[in-house]
Length: 140
Image (cartoon, rainbow, N blue to C red; front, top):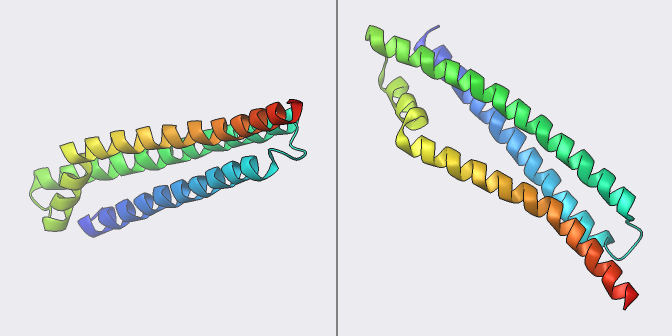
């Protein structure tokens, strides 16, 4: 593959990951809103467990999809490195290697992973907390 084809594939895969994460964030916000809006209504514990179970399965599915796209990104970087070793890599390819495989990229990956874990935990915890609080207020 040429450098342009590899960079185009890299951009496509990166955009796919971004789309997955945006959709997942939207679903997470919907779960939090559901917990807020229905905590004092008819959201029973079995329904809440079912909702959070479905969200957890969806989150795992997104995690697997993002992992698959990440595999393609790694393959693209390997192809760019092979072009660089042959001396036929242009400045855009060198910039892509630097951005994706440098120390800043490692830091970004850690920040993204921690952020996603926090969003997942808060998304699961808030509806549980809201339901607990609502039932405690009703009992008092």
